[in-house]
Image 1 (cartoon, rainbow, N blue to C red):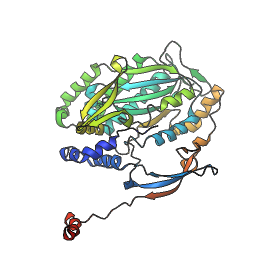
Image 2 (image 1 turned 135 degrees about the vertical axis):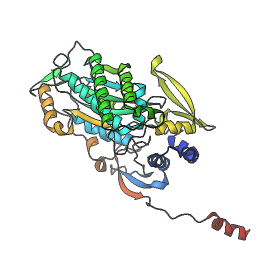
Image 3 (image 1 turned 90 degrees about the vertical axis):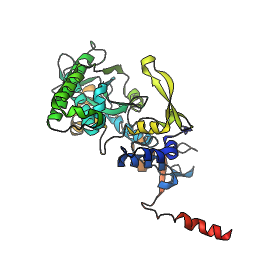
Length: 403
């Protein structure tokens, strides 16, 4: 893919210093770490590595700057996405897949911004519990399902909007683990949206009340008034009355189509470099898709510092895992139940291919000359510390004497 003309790193280099100075009242060490990583990514500051083509007849070699590998960096997710998708190949079942999205009202999104780890974990766990509970109901499917979930926190305009994407095989394993139960054709969205919405809303309401009773929720700024028990319970009641949206897409394709579909939702950051249009006069213009009016692509312009502020809204808590597996794909069940799923479907998992081998063996990019994989033969890392440059007066003094 061709390198975009404008990158988030260019904006950080241009206005990052002034942005940090103006944001000292709220910016944290994590924010600074991410900005520093994006600024230095694939530059001489991080060192370089030498790559050679695995085809001995080709003999092509080249040098590249090292990546920062920060999960919030727009340039460092392609390789991680490819590794993850290759690892999922052997887990994909030969059945249609459904896409389910759980969203929350705007009021809860404001609270989530002040309690990221608590609310984000809650959304992933409760959306999974909702799918598993509704699927186990004999009225709808009557089976144990398996799926993976991905947390996203942004809209196309970079506003804060936490929601969970779930990709689910349209069916499940019977309770005795002896047969595969296909999706009921009466429900064109795999599971009824109304039931999912009602169960999810109730679980979130109960979880919020429990977290408040255990003093696990923090309130700051405009939400300080919610620390009062009566006010908080009124807030939860208002949340419950809001319209909760659970989006379901009809089951689609099989393993090949799912692999292409997964790349749209895994290892994404708030905005990719390819959506940036221009950076002029201290303003950033980027494209966004207006899904409320037929998915029309539009452009939006923000001051550079406002753009960075919105970008940093979507930093995840340290150590937070935003891609999780549930049901028969959960780590503790996968090795035992996934083979039973393939067996009940009369199929075998896809065998490992050359692309599925470890990174050190196969490489993650291809030779521009012959197309074979490239491998790293030499890596030079930047030093972890640097000596401070001499004072400006000492640098300029010899020049003034010579003149």
